[in-house]
Length: 91
Image (cartoon, rainbow, N blue to C red; front, side):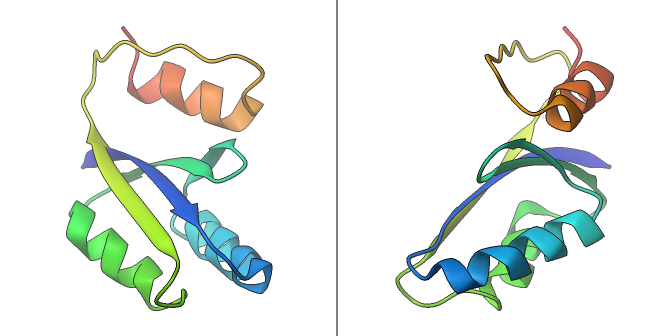
């Protein structure tokens, strides 16, 4: 299982609820408005491809692998995302 940070930028806000629902369905936790954290057996390109199906050509998605022990810090981030970081990326 790998840990990921996932961010998206959509021009048409009607896509956002669908992307959020997909990420929640994958077990992701929201850290910031459009920044999520996820543990998954899938690769970064596989996750990107799943999300790409839900966006337009002028939208963007980034999937970045995180390693256990990486340093991180948050300010006013969402509780669920911070708890995920403490559990999965503790330093």
